Length: 60
Image (cartoon, rainbow, N blue to C red; front, side):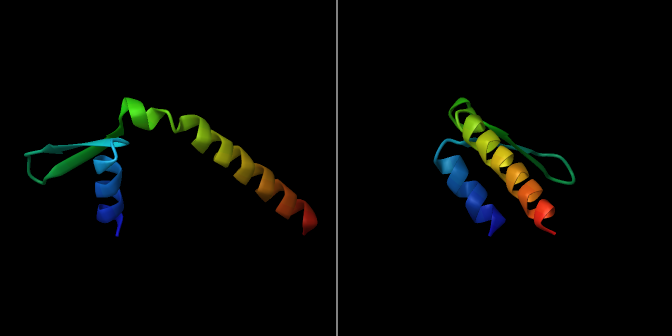
């Protein structure tokens, strides 16, 4: 499942995959310039998650 999602992200131009022909085989993934445009969205989601966790913790 992860491999399929990574493949989709690569096809959409969000990540770049680099395969190194060494033993054991090594594969790296990095955000493309286009993928980096998602950083503000991911940061906003992280902030919301922190807010949600604080709110949930204060109810217990």
